[in-house]
Image 1 (spheres, helix red, strand yellow):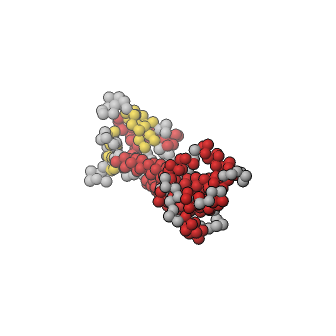
Image 2: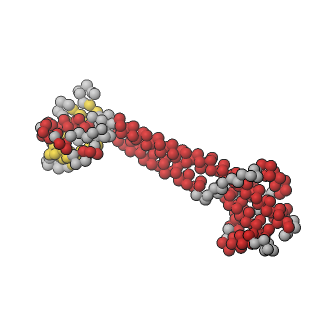
Image 3: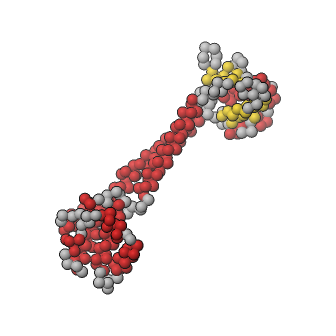
Length: 281
């Protein structure tokens, strides 16, 4: 309270607590999405990519039975993006899947190699590692043996879906954007100052206009249950004559008492009966 008795309405404790909880929860969920996007899902995708690489190299080794030397000659993929697009063409994909499932096909093993290659390249693509340094081998046999030692032969890692990592980025973006909007809203509400002169029973609203009881044509409580009140100003009263001033009683503490004090001064105590009672909570 100032020396002249003027009070400034503080922010409502319950409103501040509610806003703080919402903002913290949104920031936490956004951070969780970020962690999944940059750590958890890429790590899972990397495990699956290594497993898929092992399946591919083993399929390439078996393909030697149809085309001798293909394992050493054709295992590396120097242009992985082009090769991925080529193998992912619908007609080629259907042909390879059909031949890989048909043990009597003359290209059964080579088609199986192509199917495994596409799966491996796709797994790298989903973690952003579709790069020549990940798809070329100086010594395919040495790489195959290293993977056999590294990758579990019994546990098949769960592959990433195409939306897994993007969805986590989306969760982060949406949550943090909403949290930012809420923080901006909090700052705006905090900047709105309501001041009360108990001697004159005068309420100064954000913007600087002052309302005294004699200015009131009506205290409209149609949204009183939602902590909203509308102060209707008499015609000809400057600067708000004829206007309806919306006041949120939840965001700022003490406003409710001040509005009721103005109402009693303007219309008498009988106006507080029935539906005009202060909202509970």
